[in-house]
Length: 609
Image (cartoon, rainbow, N blue to C red; front, side):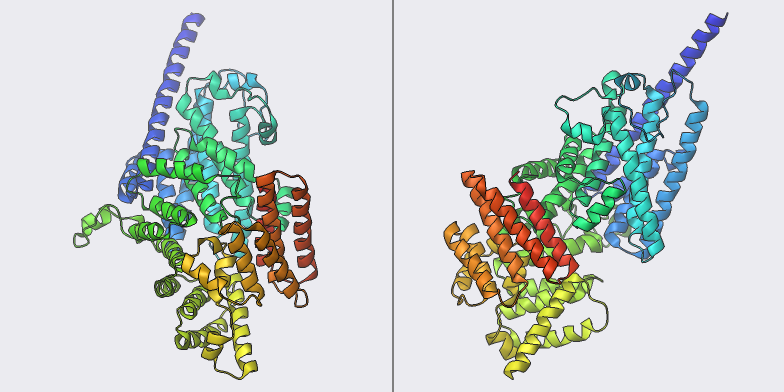
């Protein structure tokens, strides 16, 4: 009798688990399809997919819808949209808690209870072997919860409220710990051991048949840890030390390793990881030449981008990424063409038909995406020497943004100076002086303010008009900007020749010439002469250019080490980096610019290890 009842109970509980598994897998597949539509610039299609099962309280569809609103909020940067996204994410978290509580009540014990909420790592393969379908489903909910906490925290940072910022910082730690726990459950080891082990230990999915669920958990954990690591790896050293005490451990190599693993999966996190890696590669090149960047190679970025373009032929964000990659290659005409192409949706929109217009809403309609495109297009124009278009582009960007407006105005004015429109530039400088007095400037705006003050002081000292000072008494300020944004090697041949014609009595010209000789002419000896001349010219003034000359000398020795392999070059590189640190400790500088130099030095050290 009891044996018969046991068989019946086993039969129906097994059927229950199988039915739940099939349902959850279908939800996962729907979420993947919706995300694919979003990345392919078919926003309304994605919204339809995510909305269809909201009435059934599917936490996966609810999360997909929240992710869609989160994307809109980050692209629109409007208070109402941000608040709407925050509320939607909170609603998803409530749904997840209810669902998990319901699962806990209906779950039938199948062996020793393994609590997924414990922070202690599960290192024994025997525990992973005992994970069953119900555990895999619960871990899916935990992964969604971590994603929700991460989205909510980043949205809270957009608010101008210190309490929201503190709460967001706490939430980020909570999300990181969930990802960390899921990682340990998926791999059977801690993150530190995973990076050092020679042979991979068994993952729990190797003991189970539920590959889609388990792959999603494992690669979702890779994505979460990788995303945190890539963000923390570019923060200033002081911030990094504080984060280490809070349990966050930044590592660029870890970030790339985990994101690449996630990218090569067949889960929804594959495309998200590719997007993060491409964004990382195209932006980190401001701080180190792509030739020296060993953490993530250009060929890997190019291969990844081609895969994404094939998967999402209508996705305009991939045209943006391709335009940035082409710019890094020096293919400026192609870069400009791609960035212009990304301004318009790949699927034509009939704006006279309201219903069709809404159905074909595109990422190109959002202000933030337009800002990204306009910014990249402006720099491509600068490198190509098309100063009029560059000036107009940055003026357009100024009108689109609420931050760094003075800096974009400054770039436009520098383009006017480079284009010989000195009278117009003088008028813009007076306008910027008034703008700077109306608000507290950010780091880039402080830089612009210092340069403007120098020009005005020079004009007063020489008793000449400002437009005459711009024409005869200063070095082209656009060249300085190009250097600071690590774009000297991208300048057109005509501009390079113009720089070579300048008298090498100004430290900035000598610094530019050193980079040109090293990166374009491949003349290391002449490059070192130029950098040493900068140190001589700035010895008495302690100019901000001095540590940059030291950095370029260290970079040159890094290139020589890569070419010749002599170990003594490593010691020389470290000596010059120590000189840079001593300079900043003895001379008060803006913390932001010092942090940027720290990142340059970190990347340089990593490039020869």
